[in-house]
Image 1 (spheres, rainbow, N blue to C red):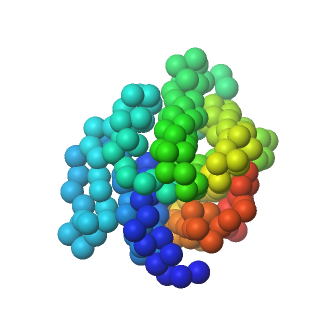
Image 2 (spheres, rainbow, N blue to C red; image 1 turned 90 degrees about the vertical axis):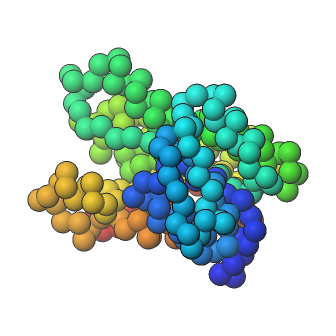
Length: 233
């Protein structure tokens, strides 16, 4: 792989300002990409990467028009990486309609709307492209989703969306894949689980490297894959 094989290619990264997102964006920029990051907050790109990190403030990823408007600003879109989402730990008895729909909006709906807008933008270029979603271990192993049923179900839907779209878009040379991480080693997770052993968790750097391999032009055939990233968990 050429270290700059993404040179000049435009890549959208939702959730790009989060703990994982910042690592993914940095890795993509190191490979030469120009990253477009939507966010609710108004942020300023670091001076060293300002020309290749373009942040669009005030984008609600559950709003169809806002998502379409964001993607319409990206020239010659090559790849779209969908890291935005949410997590909630709650048993079934404490999961009401509102909570179930909230997780579906944050995880499944945002992925669907971004996939739709990205596929449209890539179709306009005629050059194909790459889409990467984020499922989760419970999406592949539903029994591990006990006491987080809304989250597990919403991420299983992301996995199904990924595989269905991979087949739908194969004629347009748009490859659609997803990663399915176990617990990520982030400051938030360390604070939430102080008694856990973070050495068994997935590092954001490892997840970023897997995402990079899926968006590279050198990936010419992998599509419809849900890649387990479980580290030592």
